[in-house]
Amino acid sequence: MLAACGSVPLPPQQPVPTAAAPASAVPSASVAPLPPDDGVPLPPSLVQGKSRWQPVRWSDLPGFGGDALHEAWNAWIRSCERPAPQHARLCPEVRRLSIASPEEQREWMVRRLQPYRVEPLQGGTDGLLTGYYEPLLDASRQPTPAQQTPLYRPPADLATRRPWYTKQEIDTLPQARAALRGREIAYLADPLDALVLQIQGSGRLRVTEPDGRVTVLRVAYAGTNEQPYRSVGSWLLQQRAITDASWPGIKAWARANPQRVQEMLWANPRVVFFREEPLSELDSAFGPKGAQGVPLTPGRSIAVDRESIPYGTPVWLSTPGPLLSLNRLVFAQDTGSAIVGAVRADYFVGWGDAAGEIAGRLKQPLSLWVLWPR
Image (cartoon, rainbow, N blue to C red; front, top):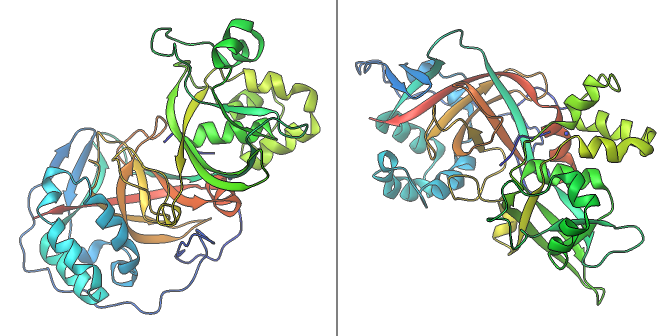
């Protein structure tokens, strides 16, 4: 996963993601009473890489009694496909509890896990939540008058030429273009959509095949040209071309300034290469695989700094808004080059345009608690 960039106004309630509407908001049905844990002595604080973990009571977790835990359980079962050693011993119980009631799941968590508030080793406790998503784009297997922007498999000499050609060189040098000839997966209509796909690291394509059939597939990250990533939004801000560096703002500028789009794209020398993956009915209900090696679950997977929170860790996430108001169980299943720091998370919203609108504008305060085996 790479750094995310996409908002729809939502009421300040917890979203319940689905494949069709990855972040639609519905009110909680009720708030369950918490099982008592006040009689258990708190353990000492822990230092984990860049963060300090301060033990707390379960009653300190905002909204813990109101989360629909069963909606998170599939993500937990996914984490158990590649569990960290500390969590592996809990996985048989996690699987059995997949058919338990929310009250039974909540009681088990209180009994088996200890919450720790995540804090930086130095400085304040302010955190940052952003969002990312999986684009869903129309494509053609062959270039057409409307679809001319290719997505590439890695070139054969990628491992021997480091760094590989820049974005500008790929577009202009005959030797770079020759090295990529025959490596095209599909073609998109909008070069900005290709850039979004490269920033997100994966996506879904509705591909029109040469015989007219339409197939849906996933393109997944397969490497880069190892050139530095530079934000086109930051470049536009430095040019004083825009004041809104969200993806809607960037696309609006591009529509108004088509003669400068190529210049903007060349400001980022990095290019991501992809591999094509089939998308089964089961696969289509989940996102791409994150850095943990398991498929991401909309609304329940986050990317973290792995030096602060290990992969596979259940995490309580709380953010007050303004775009999304969330108090929920999530899982550290991914990472990203921009996700750095103790109290830092990228929230996997889902796929498609609605998810992209939310992900592109999500930037708000964050608190995290890791839930660690007792």
